[in-house]
Image (tube, rainbow, N blue to C red; front, side, top):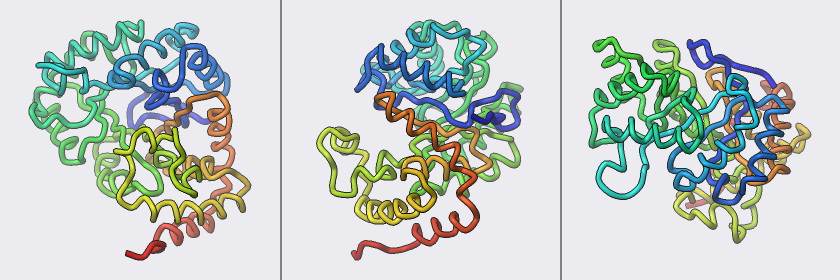
Length: 318
């Protein structure tokens, strides 16, 4: 496992990290979570990601219990605040929501601080300035060490940096976007100024595009799969993606890895990515995913060109 610096900050992250979205608390209980956290750590993963909304707080409870087995200075932990539940002041990024939501997350995680704290999505009902002020308070009070955004637009992140400079507050250090072969615009185009001007780090998620880049959907959507249980995640160009995934599968076979490993390794090739988050509902999935790092050097320039040729094809007639 290699380690990468988070943008221009000093903190080091494992190039692959363990996320808990749609797994911990949804499909996986405490014993399995502990097993996966220990396996991940034993194989070099030190970064564990969560959010208050995952399993309605259940994911944080499970991860918090599992991570008690490790020394706090050996691991990096993050969570995200926005979706706190129903009712007034339970959603968004007001000063009240961010501060109280963070303290609630810390109680569930059984920690006095997280290393990275994200504003989870952009709250259109709250000014960027209020969010910047709240995150500055949380860091200065020791509840988080770095703060960032998740699924924000580049212009909003630039505004946050501008406000932080004007107010002499701590600016965001990291953005957490989706990034995979089918979802590239933000990381490869929109965010380039963020890397160059602000030294932002990127903790990307969904390297297999919600499972499409594993090959599991090549014959339709299996019952009980992620897209079966969460149909809202089915993209409009789903059939197009499935056809391209079939061609990518042939390419991954030539490289000697699974399609999922190929997809993760492809993300690792991007030098602006600080870490690629992988998820798993059982240890066997994690075992296979972690092998991806050993294949990134096999994705030569010629292989990467083949990927671009496949992705540029129109495979399904309209």
